[in-house]
Length: 196
Image 1 (cartoon, rainbow, N blue to C red):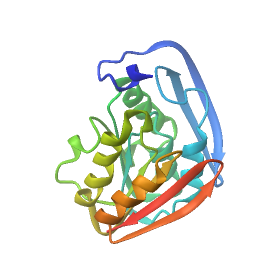
Image 2 (spheres, helix red, strand yellow):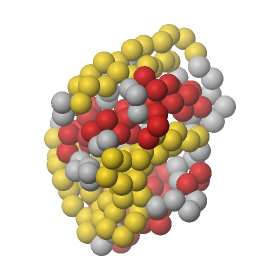
Image 3 (cartoon, rainbow, N blue to C red):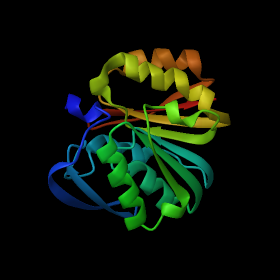
């Protein structure tokens, strides 16, 4: 799957339609080969969305958005929120833009191509949501954890879902955030919240 993180990736192969409902919010997503969890909303994303508390309004960030499931769900669930989504994979970015249109939230969703926080200089968010790319290892995960506070407003929160590395992540987060909590452990996943 290392090709996923190649910023020159191009669409290949088959196209798919994912139709799902999370917390009563219906999602329809276009997908294709060359993206993460191309045929369904993956379990980690589902666990994150079922257990994260979204503010009623504000600026949200879906970091490592893939085809946009997290960010589009947030925009649908919170009509008063403005949602930013970032991914390094151009195929995922293109699909996320299409999916924002398909779900009629494109006027409140901004999809950007870039490496994690790189295209977001000067932005501040009330909420960051991420199903981080654990395949990229601790270095990338550490950049997410340490970068979060710079991009959160006072009182802002970050929610992450993990399938491994919980102890290390908690240690890193406790040094960067004022309040850290394990929100849920279920189906081999852990949802962790950090607050500034």
